[in-house]
Length: 151
Image (tube, rainbow, N blue to C red; front, side, top):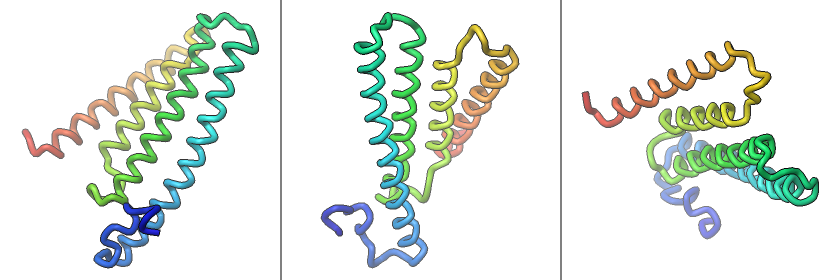
């Protein structure tokens, strides 16, 4: 077990019961998200090949780019989330860090902006998404400022 999951077993004997529970839950979440990433990666590769070579679409069509970037960003978001869980098992600072959650939320909103169809989107939806990005940016700045101890 230690050979396969060193981050789980590292200092196991010195951990409290709850810390052991956290590590086990983190391992299960890491496995589940890892499976999601692998399936998403399979579909990404399959769809890119299909979009570019099988369907003989124009590879410079913006809808093709939107579909590909949507899939890529979805995989990246899942990987970043999984990475934050692995970091918790390695003992680098508590459970999920607020800073990482805010960054993942920003990535998800950026993904949303990249894949939205500008011809059919309602203007108020764009305003709402822009406000969410500003709020998350402010939250990130506040978290970073508070974490560094600077004024």
